[in-house]
Amino acid sequence: MKKKFYSTIAAQFTEPSEYFERQKLIPLPPEPTSTMCQYENMLSISNKAIKSDTTSMAMNGWLNTKGEIYPCKWREHSKVTRLLGYDTEAAMEKDGWIKLSQMKWLICGRYSKIELNKAQDNAIRQWHSNNKLDVSYYEFTKSKL
Image (tube, rainbow, N blue to C red; front, side):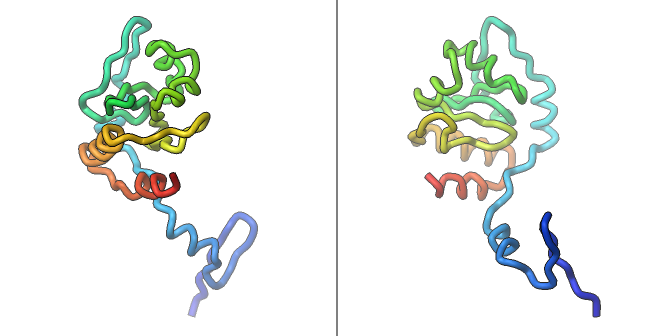
């Protein structure tokens, strides 16, 4: 009978370690759908104006306190920040904006504590639902607030 090995970067085990048991409890972030990838590739942000996204297909962007998503391509959050009249991402977070980066809603805030409101929670849930994505990673992150 062959033994199964469980590996980490540092070692191999013949029995599952506590590390593997903990990893089972942490859900993975959702993967983008092909439609979301196509949407991201078509995004074009002019230097004049930016509109909120009514399709909820953004993989990256900002969510305001009214529950409106302002999409952007990956690594273009700063550009959207300036177009929306802010100097820094920290200022946006201070005003309650939530960053969506690589399919992860940063509801804990990187620069300041964010008070997630009902409109934002509904928008995030609608984003998951519209794209047929598992909501467990969001729920896990929300439980850490």
